[in-house]
Image (cartoon, rainbow, N blue to C red; front, side):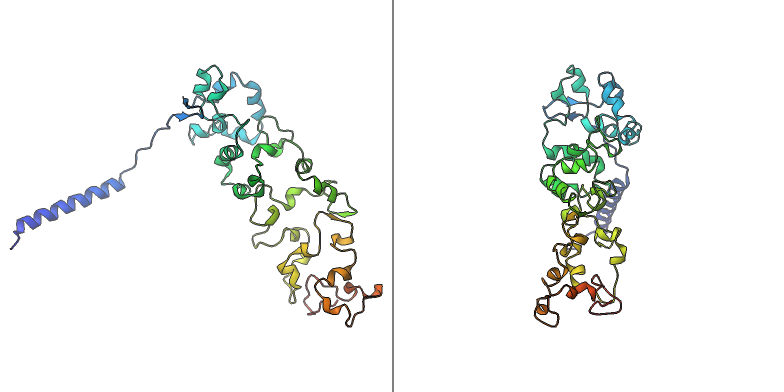
Length: 307
């Protein structure tokens, strides 16, 4: 049966209209939704009321925030009420005020689960390169939260809002590490020449033990010991594959040069067993490996790391 041309034209017009309506809908600016009321954990609906209202009852806490980096949030007007002042951390406060200061009607950090506390802090700090790995860090997995080390209202150390000065803060949990720094040979952390955070990113890292690394993912040791980095024509394989800790204990040791063994030969023979009864008898002190093989971190002239 032959279809009339008028019918075909009508279908074509209808399709064109539908296409144009769809394009217009996509191009039209979406209406920005207003900030919805936020329900507290107790089920109360609350609205944002501004930090000036909070200040009327919490003046001391308000003053403690002044002079810290968090006070910047009191001046930011362009990011919405939920990013502004006290309520950027504690949530909308109208239900709290209407309830005569009822603590159950606002978010309080005390007594909250570690995941809830981390979520609050990371809402602002997750885009910071220093903090972005915290959720998958060893600290987070073991229930350590931001307020375990930081205090917004009563920080002992104003910089970074720490509850205690480093390294004492780290030693609160890592007591065994303090003992390492008291050994005869150690990095001088207790003397203040180096800090834990110089080598470790306490907020998380892609490296084991929260170690820092440069853009090339080289060991943090090279930050100070740049001469050991190379590249070398002849590389000592353990340096590249196992890293510095294959031979050294980074915090402290009873052995010179922070070595894991008291004698250099004993350390070398852990890998080079074929030399134990070979051309280099190990019965005299003159057979110390490093007397001849001085370039043990790598060499540009010798494949056996001669000097």
